[in-house]
Image (cartoon, rainbow, N blue to C red; front, side, top):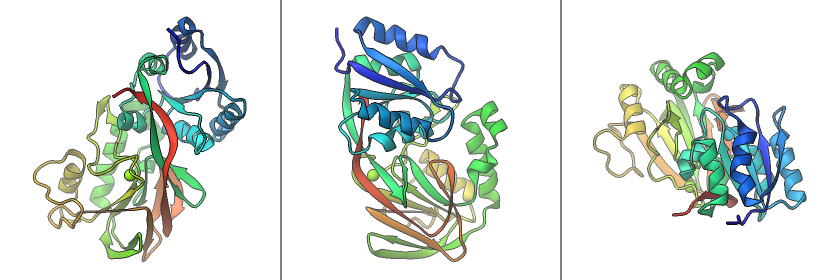
Length: 304
Ligand SMILES: [Mg+2]
């Protein structure tokens, strides 16, 4: 049996993931297929993008990134709008894109996908100024910082949930003005999300449900505003777990305090500057303008 991808560059973020024999596992899968592969190991932020660019220039058939969503985003940055696809080898604590795209979250299985029944899926990226992102940007209070490194190491994704609940209780609101493809919406909110991907990742290996209406290949971004100051926990649980009745999610839902719009270009302003995070990294503050980059990257996914 031979793989369509003969020449593969693997980019490993050694700081990510679980203690596991990465090279041995990859070799066990690739060797019987005669794949010509080699590896680059990142040392700092930016290396994965540089190595992926180099692989692209050298004409490899596929670039596989081992790491979390940050590593995958760097690889995507280098490969966007090229004909070279990428494979995701899950190595981080989050790996939300593996949930989004149904990619196995066990290294051996994810590697087997490269030589097995796969297909290419073209997915959108989004950008804010020069910063591209795969998953989401949000404005408001700081759940990432609340989930300390120590907590993340100890509890993984659960740290984010704990941090979210803690901060939601204390969260201040701001007056936002959103412009979605020219339509202006104004209102008070605690948190505004701009989603490219609907998957929120997993907690302790259990996937969180995807946010409905979010399609990573439709060329549109989804804006969600969370406004429920009175019952924030109830609103969060509805948001995450779809508890109870939800009618038309594209219109206001006063009972739940979740509002949803879609568009190609979304500008978010606020009366006082609000912190902004892009794919979990501190970005700066409002105002921001997010633009969809339709079908920007090709990713190897399981055959449907
Ligand atoms: Mg979309």
